[in-house]
Length: 254
Ligand code: GLP
Image 1: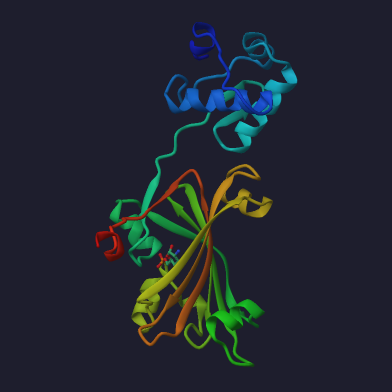
Image 2: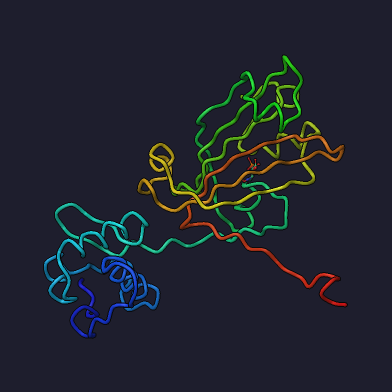
């Protein structure tokens, strides 16, 4: 169904920047306030151009960007639609939990597709971060993490081979395995930055190349202070929210 919005309201584009970005923002706003809903069809390129009084090239460019961002989807032969809404997973930033635990708390079934698990010569990065000595080797476990059928993240973990001599013995949870062997981390530093997906990761996460994603690096420590895990993950930007609880610090209270 094509939304009434395109016939009912006067289209007043937000001002500033190139026209295609103004139109893009207008469509984003319309979706955000629920004026066009997931599953609604957009008018054809020609109709939309006539309605908004911009060129078809402008419409095409705005739509291409919105498809890339995952807000719209194009189905060959049947048109352009507002993408189905993904329910977002909220992840606390202050708890050192595993993916399996995060999802279990939400009642979501998780599974993993193994992308790699083996023993390798470490990269310079791994050597420094994991504090390896010359000749030490590294265990790598890389997984696509899914909730049901929906891919959520790609996680690539590196641990010293001494900690994880047999990566194939890891079951569905790395932290459960580390728990069993007395190597579960108790503290971690996590760095989060925005990223745009490259082709390989986009394919695995089933979203368009260039779509927004979160790149997360976790360096986790044992009680002794030794680094036990270096994990670099890519989370789908449309399914994950990281939530931090903030408190007034002592300095502000004085
Ligand atoms: C999180 C972290 C990873 C960690 C993983 C363990 O998602 N980002 O650094 O390796 O959890 O999860 P699991 O025990 O489910 O394998």
